[in-house]
Image (cartoon, rainbow, N blue to C red; front, top):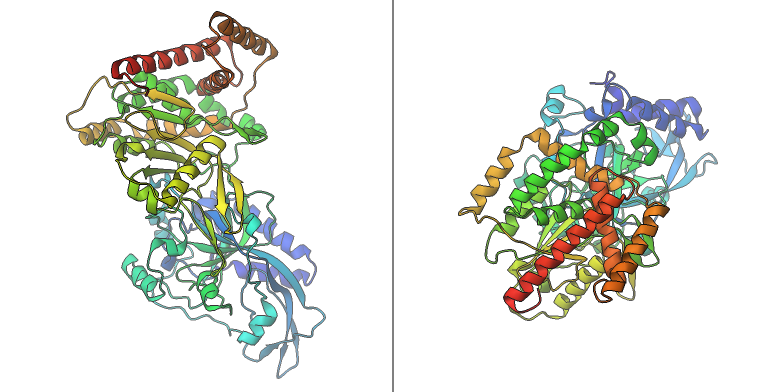
Length: 623
């Protein structure tokens, strides 16, 4: 545990110290950031910073240092505030400078008042993001020592029902002078972004802490937040705090973020509907001011946060794991073979699917995606539900979409702009990169798709084919690129497009599917399960290339196959074969394509096609 508790429980005191030493010199801000960076390097300090993702809000003090792993769901217009302002003591006429950064409310003593005409006042600009916990994040990956945190009493307060701020709030007139809040959002940047950790937590509005989930529900109802979507979570049933995150850090492109920040209260005066959305009570939507932020490449806590090329080569953990990759792959293949009822070929393709990722784009074509349609799944069975449970244990973020007529007609897939509330209303497809989306088509029955249902099917098709989501801004649509791994389970061939169809051939039919899958999961040691999780995340970030020699061999193979039977392989088939070869090489830890892996990829594709032809002959129709 890090020594020196003040920087965790009273970070504003640290900031005040740097400001007092440097005054209006802007270097004080850089020194604050460097100070907290150095503190987080000490004695495993990040593990002792309370996280809004794991620690209930009523255990945290206002103005304490926290972290938050989140996705940027919406982005409001820039906010103007007084970065530096001067107060005058009414009795002594003494002038004092204060900093406004990391605060929403001007700090004035009982005998002090703002000097709005001071030449030393400085107006600055910051961005406000509406952030939600990472959609679909698996709780099986979270290992935050909450009990240790509570026992250590780190930045903790006893649960209570109210909190009285120890400073005077500004009047609405003063509020207008200090914090000018524009009434529009930047639509062009309002896509799903992912962010890192934020430091410093502050309540906004009436800072009442909620003791239980039941009291949270009562609070929601009293504020007309009657459903989970009022907090704008993209997925139904999501839990955790939504936060207003205020930053002065400029990101060129951010989706997932991990931030360390301060928590602060504030009130504002907008239209009734806009105020309800943009300024909900801080007990419901805390305000946090970012000190440090990091764009996340992934959210797997078992791996270093950054897996860049240079860092991966020098990281001892990564190099050690790569040396034992073969046995991990073999164990994972056996595990998935059992999960797929003894079908080893389907297990091979599932591994390739789980490590696939969009590594680049050529014009509008996303390269590297590998959507798999697992057909032959038993209808009216719990198999697909339990298969999804297996995937949940392996990937950091996932969601199972039950493709029923009712869901397709009534669920909101596409985010759309609400101009009355001036916010981007979330949709199911506003997901972070590398989320595993399992579409269960075995539940689809006969019925009529209405207009929203047809639009939802189109949205899924665009996501699969082009890896993009078209956000609806009423008067126009805007494309947002994404990187979602889509697995479709179906009885016959899927209605949706897929890069690859593999027909399931069960070698065993358990009499009790739930008991079988539970025993499979319980038989795997936690340490082995963690190796599977590291394996599937790490391989996505490996570099991959094809030598000139292998490129020539692939071209010759393609020409030879076309010469023997022009209908046997097309350019699209060759592209898919190269994707399979790429994923197959990476699954073995090889960063370049070898002749052996190329032949193995051709063999797998031949086995898959033969199986589909056999099934077609049996049923007399195309699958």
